[in-house]
Image (tube, rainbow, N blue to C red):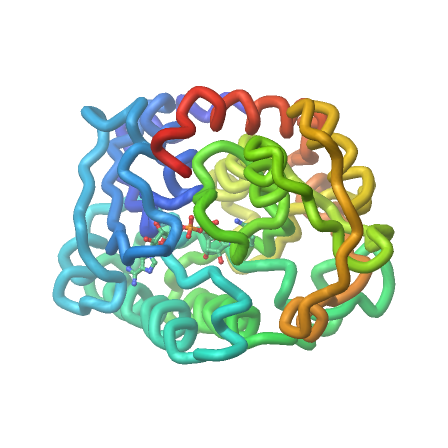
Length: 331
Ligand SMILES: NC(=O)c1ccc[n+]([C@@H]2O[C@H](COP(=O)([O-])OP(=O)(O)OC[C@H]3O[C@@H](n4cnc5c(N)ncnc54)[C@H](O)[C@@H]3O)[C@@H](O)[C@H]2O)c1
């Protein structure tokens, strides 16, 4: 990770969704960089929040148990913040097929509440938002650059795209500086491991650690880019401190893709599990499967020199090692 200590030391930082997977890894990194970290998280059951996630820094962060949609609360929490990392969200894209309201309510309305709070109570704050590569929908050409068309295939993805566009409007019209990231599949320590509806890599790791067969859908040759969470945090921080990034959209992914067979092979090798097997797509997975996807990272590499440094093998090794040590908190 680049050295950001000069930038974040003594800075006030709010992380919405900071008890979740990416937010907690970010909180730990920011505490180590000397920031004053405030976490807002509603800890909705079955979502990604886990108090153990922030164990290494539990005495060095303030945690507010509250909801992003609470206007009064957000008006208070944004005050005095130098950076607001907005990671709170409903992230289960399978759920959004059957019930669109949590996405609309939390991801869209929640983002509006945050932006209004900034407008009225802290217009100088910088807002960093993590959207998803799913905002593109199926790739028209590969790798997918930021100016590719967006045809999201689900309400989750639409809600992220809408949040992104709202942040752009507040950037342009109300001068609340915002930077927009579109993350690919992120994996690693501190993701929830109880169900299969979040990231596929962590779920495969869980199956392998339980010695259950990993099920690779279709022919397993679909191309995808998987980024280790440490690299993702590095990207978030590099963009947050780069003034020229504000108002812009950046892919956070890999231009060297892998496929699901390579992924399953790697996980089996690292864990020593018995193996994996092919399985047909479930109808809901099939409906949302965009086919080959990997990210063009020319823009982020050019502006802040970022590319993912962790190989799939190393990332899986670190992930497995973490869950072997802390299984009791995630299973
Ligand atoms: N993990 C990925 O691969 C990935 C990929 C693309 C985009 N993203 C985006 O990054 C962000 C963080 O994702 P994550 O993987 O860390 O998810 P996560 O579920 O682990 O974390 C989200 C956190 O938000 C909290 N939260 C949910 N609703 C809330 C509310 N109403 N008020 C306050 N807190 C609330 C949850 O309790 C949870 O701790 C999300 O916006 C997600 O869409 C993640």
